[in-house]
Amino acid sequence: MTMNRREFTAACFMCLTGAATIPMLSGCQSTYYTSGTIHPNGISILKSEFTYVKKDKVLERAYVIVRNDAMEFPIYVYRFSDDDYAAVLMKCTHQGNELQASGDHMHCPAHGSEFNNRGIVAQGPAEENLRTFKVTSENDNIFIDLRA
Ligand code: FES
Image (cartoon, rainbow, N blue to C red):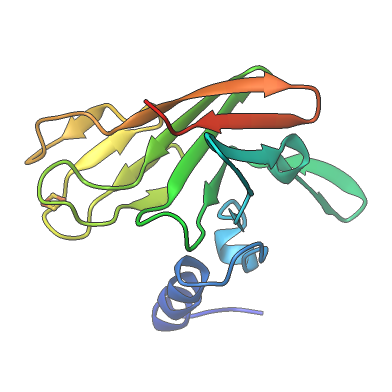
């Protein structure tokens, strides 16, 4: 199946606005949303949410996005290794717009700021890095501590 530019853009828009825990269309394969499990001090997600099966092969996602009604902004969780994750609030430090994830970086559709997968400013006008959260890895889960 071929897709023209307009159809691809529409498909990606659907990916970005999809409901929680729905794997995305093939054009946006790496974007995956989960609501996670809410705890008194944070949110946990399964490490298995960073993997998916395609044609009998187990493949890895570089990141997942945690989005649920308890949070005003989603959290971008990037996997560097089985024990090294970054959790970054997707709220632009310029004027508070919600960011969009694209692979190993996030960008702001309002005025063009860009941030890397640890929330560090890569391009302004934003001058401050994004808010990050401590992440701990335990067995099959990772825990995002929202207290700090
Ligand atoms: S609000 Fe993000 S760049 Fe202005």
